[in-house]
Length: 85
Image 1 (cartoon, helix red, strand yellow):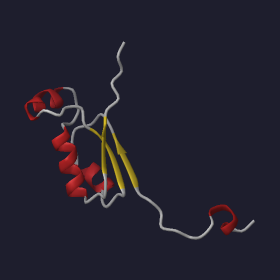
Image 2 (cartoon, one colour):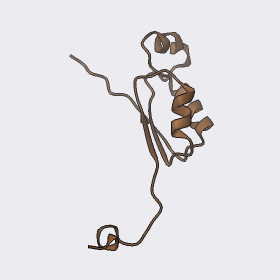
Image 3 (cartoon, one colour):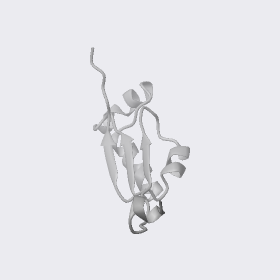
Image 4 (spheres, one colour):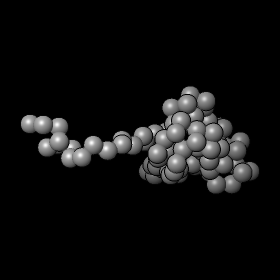
């Protein structure tokens, strides 16, 4: 079968980058560079919780947004999955 049968008309792909449970890293920024969608954890909304974010190896909303800006992504989705017992 031809490729056209499977995918239809040729179209530009999307770059999606996903990161969770991490502190901000340049390697993440490089991986997310020019992503169409960057899904990144943002555990803490309050700037004053930066020390707690560092202690538990998470990010604040502001840190995630800064990485998205440096990576020049088109869209950022903040998320965090919290397991409750």
